[in-house]
Image 1 (cartoon, rainbow, N blue to C red):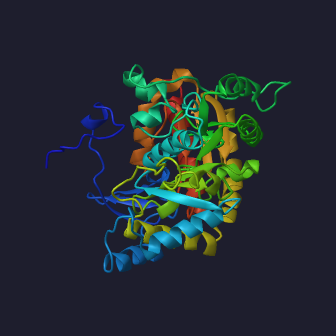
Image 2 (image 1 turned 45 degrees about the vertical axis):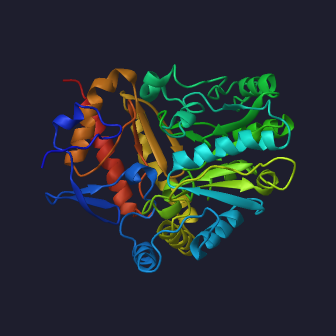
Length: 422
């Protein structure tokens, strides 16, 4: 059958090779139609935290599909979305929250950005319309998301289409500024009168190449936003639900964000569902009972989808019952120890770690060898998706010690053999 797919994030040169045709998933593995088994080492774009085919999530989906397949949340509700909104609120540092549901992380971000702008309009501060993110941050591929997150290597064709009034520079620690926050403070203070919100990926810029910054920076950012009357949006779509060794990455900083966007692992990656979790002091301004109608005229067809909510509720139950967060923290330390010997390789620029994310950045001159390394790993049964010269492990949190150790060894040996002088 001829492939008629316009593949996302896939070069035409990749299409010259035979793409795996995945027909089944089980645990940490994906199986293609040729009988090959692959380790899903990036959790299917960072989503499948519980691996594939977890029986409790599958059962929840099947049971819900037999009862109620779809029902909108515009002026209606259903039991699953009520329960999920309550659960999400109680996962926050302060539970006085309401959730806007959507179908994917980018849509949750779009909702957050619009809520931020309309909040200031609602309370009589319409001049506060600027929305900014961190340089090379990623919050999705819609035009609104590109206005606050722009990865040069991906988004260059749209540079003149989207507006970037300002950006937070990526933190560079110094002796006098160990968290690298002072340049960001200057940006926020300079534009505070116009600035509606700041949005960041907490602790790790994923698509920029898994660039990591400190929890201290995030704490200072939250404090600075509060002092300058700027809303803080934390995009936990990729980092949430145990990936970093805590339930949410922002928990490392001990902050209480104004809005939190979640997705991906919210349903363990089994159904498209996301949410923007909003503090009630913001939510309460969206009333039509005052002098002006402040209703949030924004929605998504599948917002609060019953089957997606069923998957999310099951996933949240499993994260709690199996103590996934604590296990991820324990496994992360093992992964780090197994990966550290790679730092001595001449081809390696540096290693970085954040919970169950292990990162090997090769030196720039190794870029021509990246496709060879990726293909060699694929032939060994590992589906890596390097970012430039950066290879990373972001496996399902249910991976065993033996499976994780084997993956690290495969990466180590393959990089060694593929970068040896010819």
